Length: 635
Image 1 (cartoon, rainbow, N blue to C red):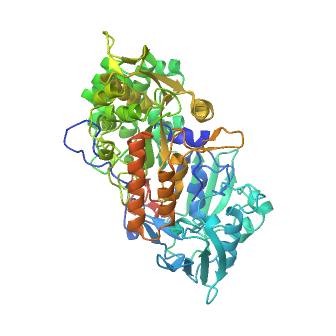
Image 2: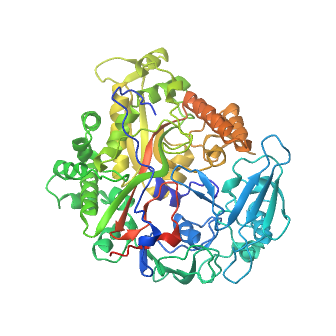
Image 3: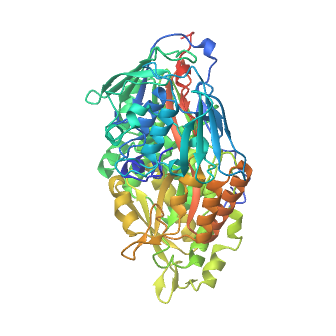
């Protein structure tokens, strides 16, 4: 697993896009965890080339290098071993293609030793057995002991004390310095020792020259200029034979994907950004797009009514169009802060893109909740949010169900709010902990904090200063626009004025988020199967650096406690899954009480799949089983 990073590249993919905060409506159905065109392997024919859209052919297939992208991982996992597979609920299962068994010493026994029993058939494509040498080299590269390795430092490898061969060449024993409960996430993917055995080998971009495979496919062509990475069957593969003869990963920008699908150039394409950012970051372009359709309300009512019968999720439209589709929440938002022309244009362009995606001939639209948690982050280092009472009042003022309705309903998805900072709704162990924040109305909390309503503006004030906050959102995102409008309406009802500010994605993190020049910020964090380690940096208490200034890490809310840090550390070291989940729930409860941020909803995922393609769609926490991908025999 890669280290938790929030770079501009990650922002481009993740930015903006459970009991409720206030609503008393019946609880909605959950957003589905995945939606895949599953089919029995026996019904999938041999042969054929699958064409899969990627943002760009990545510079490296080493997912542990800082330059790696989600496309790096998508391609790498087709050619490399991962010892465990994770299902749509993030539950791990040993992959029998690589492991006959994997066992850890029980909780309380020291030291912790994990014994892997490798499948003796597992070999690299050059005929070399997958062995302890590969485990040892990867641990050396990723543990952080040698700074010459330019690695992204995924969690867990620094906890390993030693790796040795066991009873024979198929047995690997990993001994830990300290208990590490997330051990199943290690060595996935696993690279050959030739790629990780020295800093010189590790630091090289792993691309066109990398022809070693331990998966069902191997790299045949890698042309970044032409925008194509091609995989063919691995002749040394020992597991179920791949159904497809070839997989072509084709660089296709989000804005070009609907056309490429319509022209028959792609078989699988994620359309989340193609829909969400259909109007572009340029308001003039969005406005031009708006002139191609009759009206915002007509467009959205059409797309919102197309509720898919299969499990689903995706990205949302925005602005006035959202008000038409999402009922009272968006209507209230429009009343509180009428959208500007750019917001209307974004909404219309997004709705039209969704309508087109749903109607493309010979394709089906798959929707599921993405492993990404959209939250409202509160800057506790800037007044008036330095006061925990104001932060808690703000959290109470947000009706998370109505916000989720504004984000998800126009896509025909259940308006499922998020009630946990660390776990997704469909994730194993999820529970809504929002009740620990108390049931006092926001107005009461603000009154007690000295913020009172006076005059006719409806905005509260204290000591002559109005309770007015800025809200950062990513520019060009229809989802973020509509979410911001719903939040603005909720907070206006509590006497909190909000001024939304759209920021270019490229500078969102490095600019105001890093500098602290904001009050509220709307963006998404990746959710993982190992929140005890991967989420810690987001909530860790900032510590003073050498210059005395706090070192934030990924904690852009700029607040934390030693107790929360300790709960994360205890959860990471817990070998009993039930005990680990209990500690995570305690940590989440403390984060709610602190008023660090407000979880809103899971970011949706939208994937187009050509009719007759099996094994593809919106995977959620799961990953493709590449050897099962192919074309149904009847097509």
